[in-house]
Length: 87
Image (cartoon, rainbow, N blue to C red; front, side, top):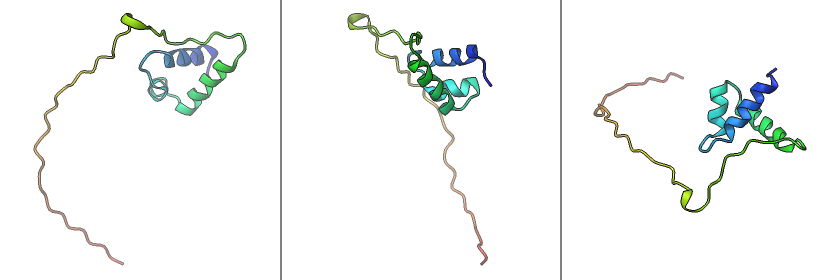
């Protein structure tokens, strides 16, 4: 059983821009479906404040930065293999 503080922290982490529930779930060591249920329950609680990501309109909004990182891979090797299947 997880504490209420742990659940609230995981739910709040989902509200950060660019964070996926799967990534948050992996970071917290829980199943993504369980986290999805916690988020849904937090949204359905009457009178509770759900942490949401800030949305910026107009000139203040910035496009997410995409960075290309070149990676050198070893040249592919051609090999032979033999497989025998007996019935």
